[in-house]
Length: 152
View 1 (cartoon, helix red, strand yellow):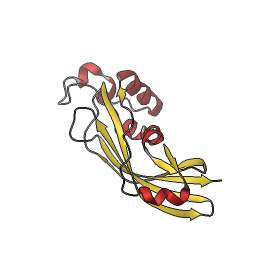
View 2 (cartoon, one colour):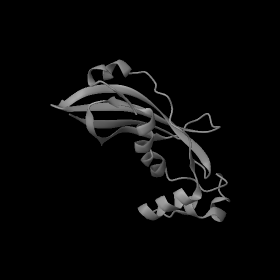
View 3 (cartoon, helix red, strand yellow):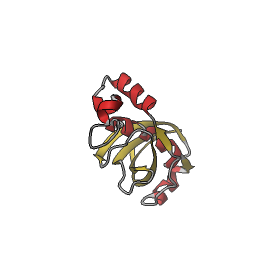
View 4 (cartoon, one colour):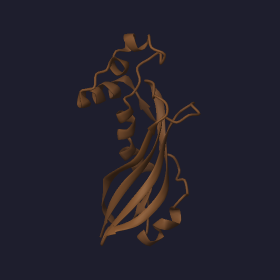
């Protein structure tokens, strides 16, 4: 995360940040997410049955892709340099545009779109996050994510 003085944060509104590094969504990650969420739908975990679908392979859970936003924001977002803590404050909008097939590589690109004072010593931000799939024109996911920064 790029850290800047709180008073300069608004200067970054509508300026896309550098994208995150690519990560591979392999079957082990998909299976672990299925176990953690108890969502074992065949399209995610049964490689033979999933191969018979129009996708031709297993696909990541949409919520797996979304859950990686926290990781990606640490790499490609901007935030105040005097924050002692950042808290996920929610999502205003999430759209799943394309499934992430097993062994695909994904990364995120973030753009700050709003900054406001929430309470004394707290800043609320809204960022647009686009999760891209390597080699694909259409992204996997586009979301507006809220972050609450607790300041020193």
